[in-house]
Length: 165
Image: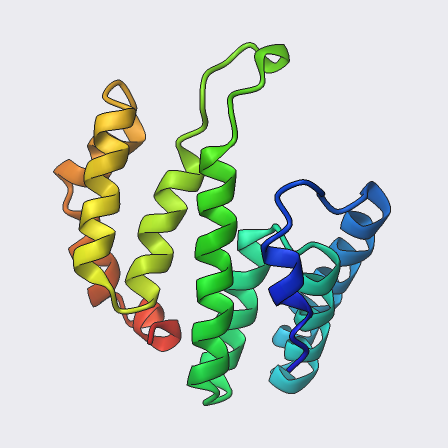
């Protein structure tokens, strides 16, 4: 595995360029096609390249981790999931964009819950959910997630178990 992600994950001062993001999106699209053909090895290679171009995309890291779990590469999957967690933490830490006219986004907070559960860190996932609940007391999404005990449902789901560590 390329260790380029190590350099990329720590970059707080620099984001991928628009061109890098577009190229990464093309690679992700090709990886999705490879997955439809059940060509996991090809999908892994394409997603690895995509993470090198768009190192701050938690979703791409999660996709890479899930492919690696299915390939039986649990250590490499853990590395990808940890990079996803870092990407979502960085996204959650960004200040709200006043031009957008809205407050901070709850999505990266909820994605941290998901990734922590994928990593098998369910207690940490519950703690992250409690933090999200505190930070976003008016969020219907967070409230519903808590009230419907979605963490338990998620970790019991067979499709989740397929990609979790």
